[in-house]
Length: 382
Image: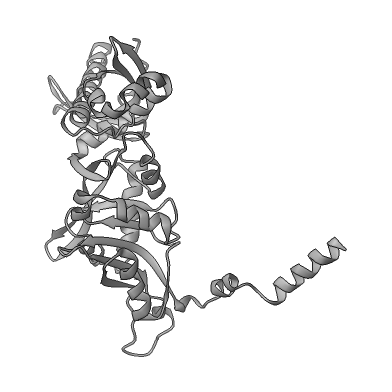
């Protein structure tokens, strides 16, 4: 009898779909396929939301004068983010589909005041993919999504592609919405994300990643340059390719990074955390800017290796000082290492953790292995 009951229930479901299934079957032209979301705050505290969506009418309207733009951009304002977005549905008669969203852009004004409300909206209501990228606009988020690409492509897709190039370039610190939420669970929440700017080049305009935003809690505290971002990513074990350039006595060296590996340790000395951050880097010498094609002998190769190690070590030490002493931000997440290795010390100092991290000792160790300087495979003895 139980099997017969289950079979009957299945048949009923097939004959009479649930409301959610009916919604899923809606024609795509009745959905607003969102590709990018920008959020700004106004002087009166209201929110302006910019939605960039695929124009689903462009494929079905073919008569002369029809709406053939591949994307449409909507600017709406409301007391909350939810009411602003809801007004788009009322205006267009279409239900937003957020699962295809590529990027969330937050205006700088919101970043300086705090991200709590923005995070709450995206976690609580929209159905965004947890891996959607998050970025800060150098000014207004609306200015970024209103940039028109020369080929008519979706600018949100171009932004997503630029941010995802962190897999190949170490100058970008990528942050996705699930990572942002997870960092809020830390005892000393801090994180980084890209800063976008609309850049004019004659009559053309494009979107560029110009710097990295550094947050403590929910508020923007400062920025890292692209060079500083490279050093930050080395410390966070996020560099698997890219390039670095550094000066030597007789020229500038460009080294292509093949791989890197960072490890972290912490000990307590006189009741003070001492962090040891070890970074191993493999690379190929790509170019020596000294005007001549000199043969690289063993002695010269050792100089190149030492120069790379000194450049990386000093750069990482500088970034650590900026983050912990100047900005008071635990963007590398080293406080979690104290929590896991020395829980008693962590509990005793939890209320004063920012001061503890600022007064901690940071020892950076860098080892560079140069694989090639040209066509010949070389292994340098330590």
